[in-house]
Image (tube, rainbow, N blue to C red; front, side, top):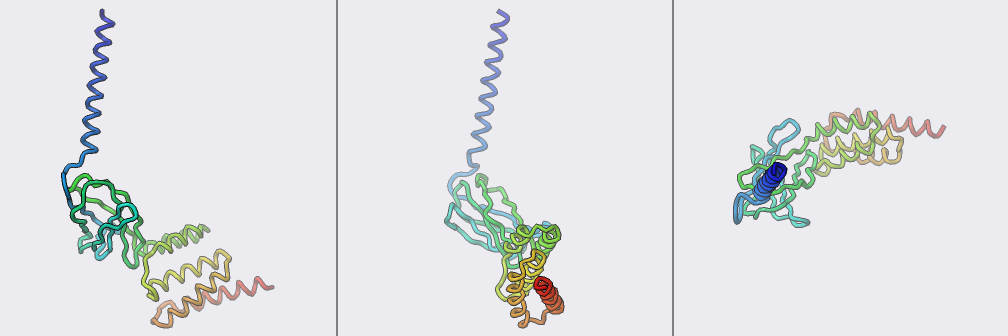
Length: 212
């Protein structure tokens, strides 16, 4: 009889635990609102400072549902969205691109926090990769930066790419970057013009040594 009572207790306890798990699962999966809600978020940089005037997009599969701009506090809001799964991306000139981040929208009072890195920070990261000989990772970082064409930002990226190709031993690629770099820099009072000329001389020496 004692064995039967213990067995009954274990069965009751097991059913109770199962019941609690079912309740927890129901609460986790059930949206805290019905109908439409506003999805709000905060965009910061690598120092947790708010990023203003960034373009943030909300995606459902391949379809972009809304595009909004962050305010001075880095806040953005997508209006009138039903609960469900979305992907959030963000971009701003001279910042790294935030590729689509999955987000389960189930609480209209919640805040989705995300981060994009400044170009200065990413250039430091790229330089570290170059010094370690990790050239593929270096170029992945540089290619992920959003730039305006023929801008001072593009000058900086081309300069780093030329340095990377010289270090990698790909002289033809380095020459192509330097040619583009020289063309753009003529339109600016570029403070690093001497660095460009020095880089050209380094490349020329590499080519001459190769032909010996």
